[in-house]
Image (cartoon, rainbow, N blue to C red; front, side):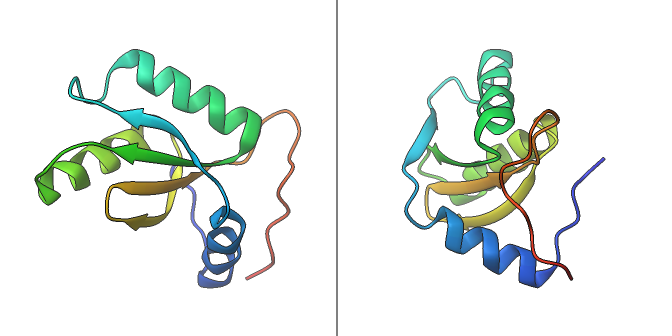
Length: 101
């Protein structure tokens, strides 16, 4: 089930992600099961992560980001160039409290 975020929540998360460094990088092999598992683990622990996506073609990068977002059951907060910001609330202990509507 995709996560629905309001514009206010997206703005809040973009502000939170501003100082983050990219945790993971998608390489030449593309989206593998190991990468998806690593993204899910990082999202469970941090809730908000940056992922760098290698690739010269913009459409290919967009497709990889979309695929990774869907497979990790996360929300795409922002995409700038080669970097995507993903959010998914933790199942065990939530650290980020989103603003209402």
